[in-house]
Length: 319
Image: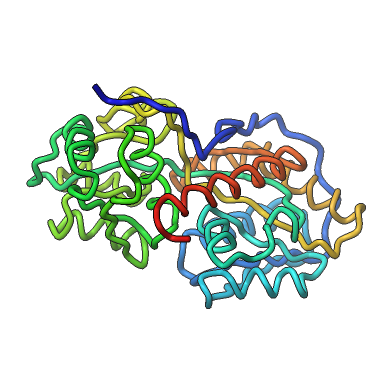
Protein backbone atom coordinates (compact mmCIF):
# COMPACT_ATOMS: atom_id res chain seq x y z
CA UNK A 1 0.00 0.00 0.00
CA UNK A 2 1.35 3.41 -0.93
CA UNK A 3 2.40 5.46 2.06
CA UNK A 4 0.97 8.98 2.27
CA UNK A 5 2.69 11.89 3.97
CA UNK A 6 2.34 15.65 4.24
CA UNK A 7 5.31 17.74 3.13
CA UNK A 8 4.42 20.90 1.23
CA UNK A 9 7.24 23.23 0.23
CA UNK A 10 4.58 25.59 -1.10
CA UNK A 11 2.83 26.13 2.21
CA UNK A 12 0.83 29.31 1.87
CA UNK A 13 1.21 29.24 -1.88
CA UNK A 14 -2.49 29.77 -2.45
CA UNK A 15 -2.75 33.25 -0.97
CA UNK A 16 -3.92 34.67 -4.28
CA UNK A 17 -4.26 38.29 -5.28
CA UNK A 18 -7.77 39.56 -4.82
CA UNK A 19 -7.72 42.22 -7.53
CA UNK A 20 -9.38 44.68 -5.22
CA UNK A 21 -7.63 47.77 -6.58
CA UNK A 22 -5.84 49.45 -3.68
CA UNK A 23 -4.78 53.10 -3.75
CA UNK A 24 -1.83 54.09 -5.91
CA UNK A 25 1.53 53.76 -4.13
CA UNK A 26 4.02 56.64 -3.78
CA UNK A 27 5.72 57.31 -7.13
CA UNK A 28 9.37 56.15 -7.11
CA UNK A 29 12.14 58.12 -8.78
CA UNK A 30 13.86 54.96 -10.04
CA UNK A 31 13.28 51.20 -9.85
CA UNK A 32 15.89 48.68 -11.02
CA UNK A 33 15.01 44.99 -11.14
CA UNK A 34 18.07 42.86 -10.43
CA UNK A 35 17.77 39.45 -12.10
CA UNK A 36 20.13 36.71 -10.87
CA UNK A 37 20.92 34.40 -13.76
CA UNK A 38 20.79 34.75 -17.56
CA UNK A 39 18.96 37.63 -19.21
CA UNK A 40 16.70 35.33 -21.23
CA UNK A 41 15.36 33.23 -18.36
CA UNK A 42 12.01 33.12 -16.61
CA UNK A 43 13.18 35.54 -13.91
CA UNK A 44 13.97 38.12 -16.57
CA UNK A 45 10.54 37.62 -18.15
CA UNK A 46 8.93 38.21 -14.75
CA UNK A 47 10.97 41.42 -14.29
CA UNK A 48 10.05 42.72 -17.75
CA UNK A 49 6.34 42.21 -17.10
CA UNK A 50 6.71 44.09 -13.80
CA UNK A 51 8.57 46.87 -15.60
CA UNK A 52 5.85 47.26 -18.22
CA UNK A 53 3.10 47.46 -15.61
CA UNK A 54 4.93 50.04 -13.49
CA UNK A 55 5.69 52.17 -16.54
CA UNK A 56 2.10 51.95 -17.74
CA UNK A 57 0.80 53.04 -14.33
CA UNK A 58 3.54 55.68 -14.03
CA UNK A 59 4.45 54.44 -10.56
CA UNK A 60 8.14 55.26 -11.20
CA UNK A 61 9.93 57.85 -13.33
CA UNK A 62 12.51 55.33 -14.51
CA UNK A 63 12.44 51.52 -14.54
CA UNK A 64 15.30 49.22 -15.57
CA UNK A 65 16.12 45.51 -15.66
CA UNK A 66 19.67 44.21 -15.24
CA UNK A 67 20.82 40.57 -15.33
CA UNK A 68 23.50 39.41 -12.91
CA UNK A 69 24.78 36.07 -14.28
CA UNK A 70 27.57 34.06 -12.71
CA UNK A 71 27.78 31.79 -9.71
CA UNK A 72 24.24 30.56 -10.24
CA UNK A 73 23.01 33.66 -8.44
CA UNK A 74 25.57 33.50 -5.62
CA UNK A 75 27.50 36.55 -6.78
CA UNK A 76 24.29 38.44 -7.42
CA UNK A 77 23.16 37.83 -3.84
CA UNK A 78 26.51 38.91 -2.40
CA UNK A 79 26.63 42.08 -4.48
CA UNK A 80 23.03 42.93 -3.68
CA UNK A 81 23.62 42.51 0.05
CA UNK A 82 26.83 44.54 -0.07
CA UNK A 83 25.80 47.34 -2.41
CA UNK A 84 22.07 47.25 -3.11
CA UNK A 85 20.78 50.71 -3.94
CA UNK A 86 17.60 52.33 -2.69
CA UNK A 87 15.50 51.47 -5.74
CA UNK A 88 16.99 48.00 -6.44
CA UNK A 89 14.61 45.05 -6.29
CA UNK A 90 16.07 41.56 -6.61
CA UNK A 91 13.93 38.86 -8.20
CA UNK A 92 13.77 35.80 -5.93
CA UNK A 93 12.61 32.26 -6.72
CA UNK A 94 13.11 28.71 -5.38
CA UNK A 95 16.43 28.38 -7.23
CA UNK A 96 17.82 31.46 -5.47
CA UNK A 97 16.84 30.00 -2.11
CA UNK A 98 18.57 26.73 -3.04
CA UNK A 99 21.73 28.52 -4.14
CA UNK A 100 21.93 30.41 -0.85
CA UNK A 101 21.43 27.17 1.10
CA UNK A 102 23.95 25.13 -0.92
CA UNK A 103 26.62 27.84 -0.74
CA UNK A 104 25.92 28.40 2.95
CA UNK A 105 25.41 32.09 2.28
CA UNK A 106 23.68 34.36 4.77
CA UNK A 107 19.94 33.53 4.92
CA UNK A 108 18.10 35.55 2.28
CA UNK A 109 15.33 36.56 4.68
CA UNK A 110 17.92 37.84 7.14
CA UNK A 111 20.24 39.68 4.75
CA UNK A 112 17.56 41.43 2.64
CA UNK A 113 14.09 42.92 3.11
CA UNK A 114 11.64 40.35 1.69
CA UNK A 115 8.88 42.48 0.16
CA UNK A 116 6.40 40.19 -1.55
CA UNK A 117 5.78 36.99 -3.45
CA UNK A 118 3.77 37.98 -6.50
CA UNK A 119 3.23 35.05 -8.86
CA UNK A 120 3.88 31.39 -9.43
CA UNK A 121 3.78 28.75 -12.10
CA UNK A 122 2.37 25.25 -11.71
CA UNK A 123 4.40 22.22 -12.69
CA UNK A 124 3.35 19.12 -14.63
CA UNK A 125 4.79 15.61 -14.49
CA UNK A 126 4.92 14.49 -18.12
CA UNK A 127 5.95 11.32 -19.93
CA UNK A 128 6.98 10.55 -23.46
CA UNK A 129 4.03 8.91 -25.28
CA UNK A 130 6.29 5.96 -26.16
CA UNK A 131 7.21 5.33 -22.52
CA UNK A 132 5.71 2.61 -20.33
CA UNK A 133 4.31 5.21 -17.92
CA UNK A 134 0.64 5.65 -18.80
CA UNK A 135 -0.58 7.05 -15.47
CA UNK A 136 0.80 8.55 -12.28
CA UNK A 137 0.14 5.21 -10.55
CA UNK A 138 2.50 3.54 -13.04
CA UNK A 139 5.21 6.02 -12.08
CA UNK A 140 4.50 5.71 -8.33
CA UNK A 141 4.64 1.91 -8.44
CA UNK A 142 7.96 1.97 -10.30
CA UNK A 143 9.43 4.53 -7.89
CA UNK A 144 8.43 2.53 -4.82
CA UNK A 145 9.71 -0.68 -6.36
CA UNK A 146 13.09 0.92 -7.13
CA UNK A 147 13.69 4.63 -6.35
CA UNK A 148 16.71 4.60 -8.67
CA UNK A 149 14.70 3.07 -11.50
CA UNK A 150 12.73 5.91 -13.14
CA UNK A 151 15.00 8.61 -14.57
CA UNK A 152 13.23 11.97 -14.23
CA UNK A 153 14.35 15.06 -16.13
CA UNK A 154 14.13 18.69 -15.10
CA UNK A 155 16.05 21.94 -14.82
CA UNK A 156 19.24 22.54 -12.86
CA UNK A 157 20.07 20.42 -9.82
CA UNK A 158 18.52 21.98 -6.73
CA UNK A 159 16.05 23.99 -8.80
CA UNK A 160 12.26 23.83 -8.55
CA UNK A 161 11.87 20.75 -10.78
CA UNK A 162 14.40 18.83 -8.69
CA UNK A 163 12.83 19.99 -5.42
CA UNK A 164 9.39 18.97 -6.63
CA UNK A 165 10.66 15.51 -7.59
CA UNK A 166 12.15 15.11 -4.12
CA UNK A 167 8.94 16.23 -2.43
CA UNK A 168 6.86 13.91 -4.60
CA UNK A 169 9.10 10.96 -3.76
CA UNK A 170 8.87 11.81 -0.06
CA UNK A 171 5.10 12.03 -0.33
CA UNK A 172 5.05 8.53 -1.79
CA UNK A 173 7.44 7.16 0.83
CA UNK A 174 10.37 6.55 -1.55
CA UNK A 175 14.01 7.00 -0.53
CA UNK A 176 15.07 10.40 -1.92
CA UNK A 177 18.76 9.51 -1.59
CA UNK A 178 18.41 7.02 -4.44
CA UNK A 179 16.53 9.13 -6.99
CA UNK A 180 17.86 9.32 -10.55
CA UNK A 181 17.46 12.95 -11.64
CA UNK A 182 18.66 14.13 -15.06
CA UNK A 183 19.40 17.86 -14.80
CA UNK A 184 19.43 20.21 -17.79
CA UNK A 185 20.57 23.85 -17.95
CA UNK A 186 16.95 24.97 -18.36
CA UNK A 187 13.54 23.46 -17.86
CA UNK A 188 12.74 23.96 -21.55
CA UNK A 189 15.73 21.81 -22.53
CA UNK A 190 14.57 19.09 -20.15
CA UNK A 191 11.14 19.13 -21.79
CA UNK A 192 12.74 18.77 -25.23
CA UNK A 193 14.66 15.73 -23.97
CA UNK A 194 11.37 14.09 -22.97
CA UNK A 195 9.72 15.02 -26.27
CA UNK A 196 12.49 13.40 -28.32
CA UNK A 197 12.62 10.31 -26.10
CA UNK A 198 16.03 10.75 -24.47
CA UNK A 199 14.31 10.66 -21.05
CA UNK A 200 10.98 8.97 -20.34
CA UNK A 201 9.72 11.30 -17.60
CA UNK A 202 10.17 14.79 -16.28
CA UNK A 203 8.77 17.76 -14.43
CA UNK A 204 8.22 20.93 -16.44
CA UNK A 205 6.42 24.21 -15.95
CA UNK A 206 2.96 24.46 -17.45
CA UNK A 207 4.05 27.05 -19.99
CA UNK A 208 6.82 24.79 -21.38
CA UNK A 209 4.72 21.64 -21.68
CA UNK A 210 1.17 22.70 -22.59
CA UNK A 211 1.72 23.00 -26.36
CA UNK A 212 3.42 19.59 -26.47
CA UNK A 213 0.55 18.06 -24.48
CA UNK A 214 -2.04 19.48 -26.87
CA UNK A 215 -0.08 18.17 -29.85
CA UNK A 216 0.21 14.69 -28.33
CA UNK A 217 3.99 14.87 -27.97
CA UNK A 218 3.78 14.55 -24.18
CA UNK A 219 1.46 12.67 -21.84
CA UNK A 220 0.57 14.50 -18.59
CA UNK A 221 0.52 12.32 -15.47
CA UNK A 222 -0.13 14.83 -12.67
CA UNK A 223 -0.14 18.57 -11.93
CA UNK A 224 1.26 20.30 -8.84
CA UNK A 225 -1.68 22.72 -8.50
CA UNK A 226 -4.43 22.52 -5.89
CA UNK A 227 -7.00 22.01 -8.65
CA UNK A 228 -6.90 20.47 -12.10
CA UNK A 229 -5.53 22.74 -14.82
CA UNK A 230 -7.72 23.57 -17.79
CA UNK A 231 -6.37 21.97 -20.96
CA UNK A 232 -4.26 19.38 -19.10
CA UNK A 233 -6.04 16.03 -18.70
CA UNK A 234 -4.30 14.91 -15.52
CA UNK A 235 -5.10 14.71 -11.79
CA UNK A 236 -3.46 16.81 -9.11
CA UNK A 237 -0.75 15.32 -6.93
CA UNK A 238 -3.22 15.50 -4.05
CA UNK A 239 -5.75 13.43 -6.00
CA UNK A 240 -2.93 11.00 -6.78
CA UNK A 241 -2.13 10.39 -3.11
CA UNK A 242 0.67 12.93 -2.58
CA UNK A 243 -0.50 15.66 -0.21
CA UNK A 244 1.50 18.37 -1.91
CA UNK A 245 0.76 21.66 -3.66
CA UNK A 246 3.83 23.27 -5.22
CA UNK A 247 4.56 26.26 -7.44
CA UNK A 248 7.69 27.74 -8.96
CA UNK A 249 7.21 31.22 -7.49
CA UNK A 250 8.64 34.72 -8.00
CA UNK A 251 9.06 37.43 -5.39
CA UNK A 252 10.97 40.64 -4.74
CA UNK A 253 13.66 41.50 -2.20
CA UNK A 254 14.93 44.96 -1.20
CA UNK A 255 18.24 46.03 0.30
CA UNK A 256 18.69 46.08 4.07
CA UNK A 257 20.19 49.55 3.58
CA UNK A 258 16.70 50.98 3.15
CA UNK A 259 15.10 53.10 5.81
CA UNK A 260 11.64 52.22 7.06
CA UNK A 261 9.93 54.92 4.96
CA UNK A 262 11.40 53.69 1.68
CA UNK A 263 10.77 50.08 2.60
CA UNK A 264 7.10 50.89 3.27
CA UNK A 265 6.87 52.70 -0.08
CA UNK A 266 8.27 49.69 -1.97
CA UNK A 267 5.99 47.35 -0.06
CA UNK A 268 3.03 49.53 -1.06
CA UNK A 269 4.22 49.30 -4.68
CA UNK A 270 4.32 45.50 -4.52
CA UNK A 271 0.88 45.31 -2.95
CA UNK A 272 -0.59 47.69 -5.53
CA UNK A 273 0.83 45.56 -8.34
CA UNK A 274 -0.25 42.25 -6.83
CA UNK A 275 -3.80 43.45 -6.13
CA UNK A 276 -4.36 45.08 -9.53
CA UNK A 277 -6.52 43.69 -12.30
CA UNK A 278 -3.69 44.47 -14.71
CA UNK A 279 -1.40 42.08 -12.83
CA UNK A 280 -3.99 39.32 -12.97
CA UNK A 281 -4.32 39.85 -16.72
CA UNK A 282 -0.54 39.86 -17.19
CA UNK A 283 -0.28 36.60 -15.25
CA UNK A 284 -3.00 35.00 -17.38
CA UNK A 285 -1.16 35.99 -20.58
CA UNK A 286 2.04 34.39 -19.32
CA UNK A 287 0.56 31.24 -17.83
CA UNK A 288 1.24 32.32 -14.23
CA UNK A 289 -1.02 32.42 -11.19
CA UNK A 290 -1.16 35.54 -8.95
CA UNK A 291 0.16 34.53 -5.50
CA UNK A 292 0.45 37.70 -3.47
CA UNK A 293 2.02 37.32 -0.04
CA UNK A 294 3.54 40.54 1.31
CA UNK A 295 5.55 42.01 4.16
CA UNK A 296 6.06 39.99 7.34
CA UNK A 297 3.89 37.15 6.02
CA UNK A 298 6.24 36.74 3.06
CA UNK A 299 9.32 37.02 5.30
CA UNK A 300 8.11 34.26 7.62
CA UNK A 301 7.09 32.08 4.68
CA UNK A 302 10.51 32.61 3.06
CA UNK A 303 12.28 31.65 6.28
CA UNK A 304 10.23 28.46 6.42
CA UNK A 305 10.98 27.75 2.74
CA UNK A 306 14.70 28.10 3.37
CA UNK A 307 14.50 25.65 6.26
CA UNK A 308 12.52 23.10 4.25
CA UNK A 309 14.83 23.52 1.28
CA UNK A 310 17.89 22.96 3.48
CA UNK A 311 16.48 19.66 4.75
CA UNK A 312 15.33 18.53 1.31
CA UNK A 313 18.65 19.30 -0.39
CA UNK A 314 20.35 17.23 2.29
CA UNK A 315 17.95 14.36 1.62
CA UNK A 316 18.72 14.66 -2.12
CA UNK A 317 22.46 14.45 -1.44
CA UNK A 318 23.25 18.00 -2.53
CA UNK A 319 24.61 19.17 0.84
